[in-house]
Length: 292
Image (cartoon, rainbow, N blue to C red; front, side):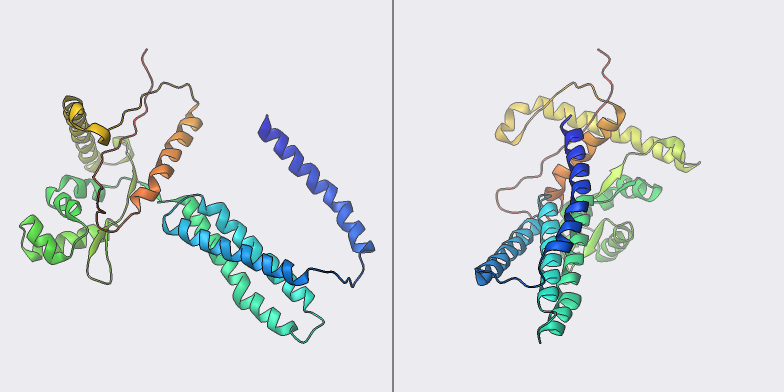
């Protein structure tokens, strides 16, 4: 109901602004003297500064609240360019304002909108491929991933494997988009959002490979859940449990899953080394029809 009212209001406002804009175009004077000119522009720039600073902090921490703020900052930059050019059009600073708008304010606004779009999209979600199955079923690759971030030499020492094997494993993981090497030589894991496949999506022999992978995956999950249930009293504040039954449509279930991924995104993108006081925590999202 509220959504429909907002949409009706937006449509009515758009219709109302048509005659109002025509009226202003015929009645407003070409020149107008006003007070508080300096305060208006200084206040505008202070607001723009706050938007830049807040957007930088939120973007650095990959907060999704940065999306509306970056969009608002882009809108303010476009407004800044518009008024600078128009108000300086009859002055000697005309071309300076045009150059600042074309090569400064408008390109920055476009960059901010692109960054906002990427933050809104989050980590791309893709289907599991046969290469992903091979990566996840190879214990050597798993040991390398668990030891990251680390240099190649540190990985060899941590896993007890010779450097040529570590280099080969890193090549495979890098080709699959699982790791990346930073300028300091340290390898970091890249967050993954993989959609669980259905075996019938593949042709043989990959179909059998994927089916076996899924069977083993759920066996590991059951063992992990059994272990967690047996040790639940030992975790203290490091454990949490939520259970719920809801009635939803299939599209609503997809929205719920997407919201869960969005909530995890800021934590998945913390690519530095483990910070003091942190622990690795296993999180799972399962949704299935209730039989009761």
